Length: 97
Image 1 (cartoon, rainbow, N blue to C red):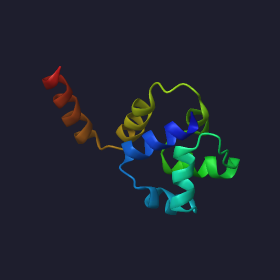
Image 2: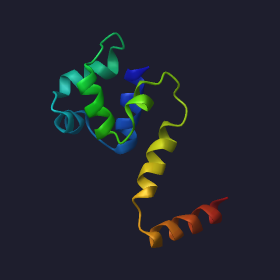
Image 3: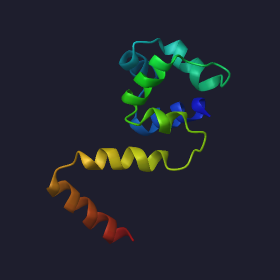
Image 4: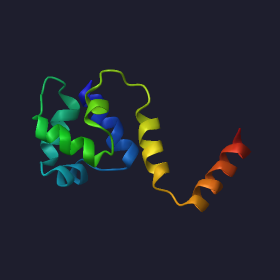
């Protein structure tokens, strides 16, 4: 559900309700309602802003399947890392396997 995805992605990104609301030009109370009341249907414009703020595509945000939300965020963040940081991250991953 959209409400679950917004809450999960906001949590993954470490954003408060207020921070996300400010990023998308909304209110903390409306973001809370979106997360708690699945029957609320935001406008396409707001969904677009939420997707951008949460660093996912609109399709991913609207997709009913919950799989891979964390992976999507991880790989988007990974793409922006320096090559040196990517090498360090790979070393860490190999060490904890």
